[in-house]
Image (cartoon, helix red, strand yellow):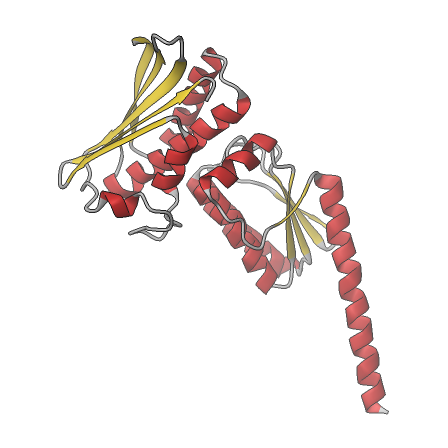
Length: 136
Length: 137
C-alpha cells in the first residue's frame, strides 16, 4: 500500500505529495497527519502540492479538512506550491478552500509558519506576565 | 466528425482511476491540448469517475479523440454505468446538492470545466455522461 511520508522538523510537519492522489491515499494522509500532530505536538503543517497535477472536489475537501482539524489541535496548516492550472480549475469548479492558508512555495510557507510561531510564543509570554501580576 | 482514437477503460476499483486519468492525460497530450484545458478535463473526469464508483459501483469509460469539420479537435469521454440512475437530474445539476456526503460540486463543477456536457439517466438502468473538451476551449 502506498503511503505519503510525513517528516517532522522541529515544531513542524512536512508533507510533500509526489504522486497523484486517489481517494484512499488522501484519506489515509488526513488520518496520519492528525495523529502525527497529536504525537509530536506539532505547531504547524506544511503540505507541498507542487507535483500534484489535479485537485478535484474530493481532494480539495481533504485539504480543507486537514486545515480545520489541525486548527482544532492548535496547529496551522499551509498548502504550498499549487500549480497555476490547478488554481484556475479549483475556482471554476467552485471549490471553497475554507480555512486553508496558502503560500507560493515551500520557503514562503515555512516563513509563514515561523512567523505564526513567534506570534504565538509572544502571546504566551504576555499571558504568563498577566498571571504573575495577578499573583502579586 | 471523425473519431481518431478510441479506447474503453473499465472502472471497477479506486486504483483504476489512476490508470484512467493517465490515459486521459495521454490523449490530451496527443492533440497538444494546453495545460489549463488539460487540467480542467482531468479534473472533470476525476469527478465523474468518482460518482460512477460511489453511486453505481463502477462502470466503463469510452475515451475518444474527435475531430470536427470546423477543424476543432478534442477529447470526448463517455462514462456509462448500470447504477440506480439519478431521480432528479435538475437537482443533481445544482451546486451544493448531494445525496451522499460530498460537497455536491461533482456534476455542476464538471459541467463548468468542459466544452460540451450531456447527461442521460434512466431510473434503475443507469446513467451516461458525455463530456467533450476542445483543444482550445
